Length: 144
Image 1 (cartoon, rainbow, N blue to C red):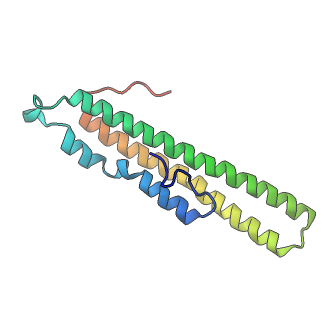
Image 2: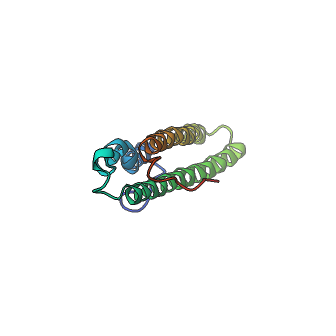
């Protein structure tokens, strides 16, 4: 699932969060997806639960990987900006504009790094719910 417009905006943190929110839709709706697609014992003959669970797992993994890649890409980009601003500050330590911009970028970098922790919690929650409902029907391959 790509970001709207195909590119994740790393410069504006609020837009960055908004795009991540959209990208996390599959995780937010996992319980509903499982309830509507994975049958209970009484309806198990009407739907191929193994295939359904496998497809859901694959789409979850794809979403997790794309978000992880997007977050890490923005962290790398913002880290480069912070490094550049540190160099500029070293050359001109009295320039308040550079100091302000550096602090702003450092704060944004910390917020983006904290999104990795949020991502871990979201992924763990989704996989836990998935395993509870699909463990009988589908066993995902071991993750390295």
